[in-house]
Amino acid sequence: MSFQTKTRRAYVNITSQIENYVKESGVQEGLCLVNAMHITASVYINDDESGLLSDYDRWLEKLAPHEPVSDYEHNRTGEDNGDAHLKRQIMGREVVVAITKNCLDLGPWEQIFYGEFDGRRKKRVLVKILGE
Image (tube, rainbow, N blue to C red; front, top):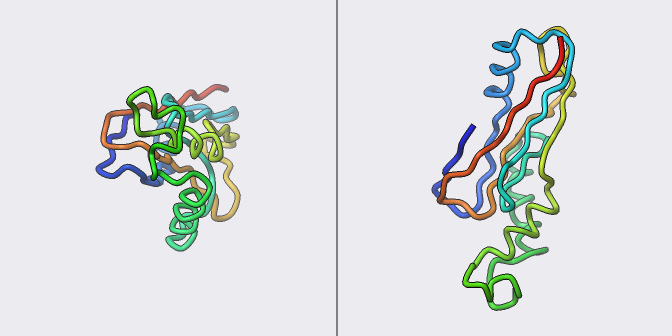
């Protein structure tokens, strides 16, 4: 999968796309690994509720504010995304979801998200489906 968000930060529900990959794979029992292939993006599981997504955004910005960019040693390399690396660390790199009867075995309200913290350029997400 690939993403190129229009904004620096974005939260994209990718559950239906992952469900489609699982269906197409034909795997009945196994595991599905979904991981961000970039150090400023995340894959995580939580509820798809607009208030929660807004809370995440505010919370992450309090923990690792984008500005002032001069506060980050990393940004002395010419980058301006030191905060994005920290946000990714908090939100995580990947998820592994069980597959049962050719379906993702998610709990109530659980959804898979791609979290972007330094957007506006193309990034990849790897999906590996293992099982029988």
